[in-house]
Image (cartoon, rainbow, N blue to C red; front, side, top):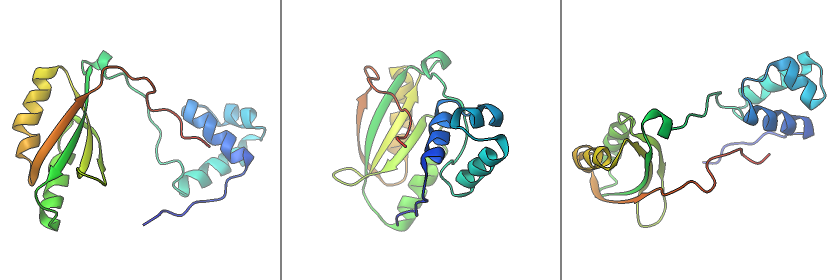
Length: 157
């Protein structure tokens, strides 16, 4: 089911662009950048948060500097789409810190996982001892990131 959208004017869009670049920007500095005073700016930010346009604030971390230089995208097919199997698979995925993100997909495979690991040995350990033993997993296909040409960035607004 599609989520509802809210109407955004030019100032809302400037606020969103600025906060994507720096989520720690103080309201006074943000207001100055977008051409508002602090109180109306804060009201707009609050409205965008309450509408779910801004879902959270956080820091962008470098996995390699944290000892996790290996990134893999793993396609997963389940052998059953019974509700119980899918729920057990989702629960098992949620418990794995190696899985940075997981997406339900259309096409040949059912899921696409973004996995981080210290090295190939750590990835193999995760794949063989965890992923392939998760409920319902029938098949996996892994591709490893060689370089990030365009890492995740700002949502165009």
